[in-house]
Length: 137
Image (cartoon, helix red, strand yellow):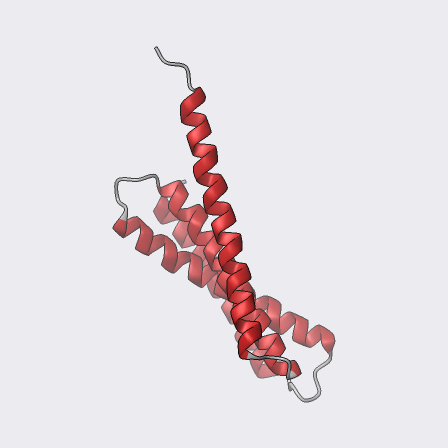
């Protein structure tokens, strides 16, 4: 599957998720909604945001790094899109329950940054090990 096909399938899935979120948004009254309704609201919004952030990140990386592997760009975009979506959804949940605060936001951003650093560190380390152990001809 090439990049264009991947982005097209991802865009279709994102459009479905955002369409489902729009339907949920119009059909649910937040004042009377139960827990399942709110769960569906957050899941559809989160799915749409992951897709949207992944598409934007992949397109930007593909344009900026034309010579490097596109698989790395897709992997990083998906991971960062997921982290950003989780951060936004968690913030919305905290806002709706009245527990949102600036120090808590900084804590969540810091945890997200540590997770990203962890992945980048071990990805570079793993890539370094592979190149060192390859047999030379």
